[in-house]
Length: 154
Image (cartoon, rainbow, N blue to C red):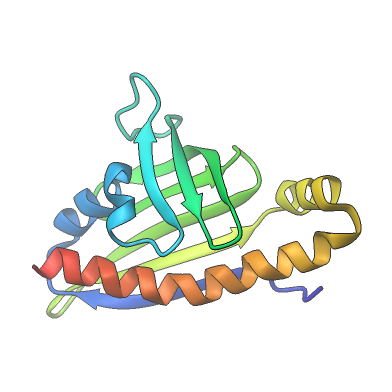
């Protein structure tokens, strides 16, 4: 297994940070830009505040699965982030005003509990599964960012 289980990439979106935040923090729209997560919905009563939970449905050619995630950052115009399973992987967006709009950065990190979960769930196949998830993040983040920019600038 490689040691680096984090990745981020950035893109400039021709829209103000608050508008981009309103887009990326609306998890119900995730299916419009994610290559893997085809749908998300808020748990009952959730509004997108820190501590709120939502469920996402992920689809690859090999399988379909759902995850629950908890919002860990919700600062309009600056950052929106969540942790899958409450402790397994952290995904998020940071927003920075720049000439021409907003620098949108998407980041991902496998957390220690996530690596332990993979070892427990997949046993000897865990390294391959971790590598697959890492590759999916590295390939998916640039695709996601480009799609968010298309939606935001439409």
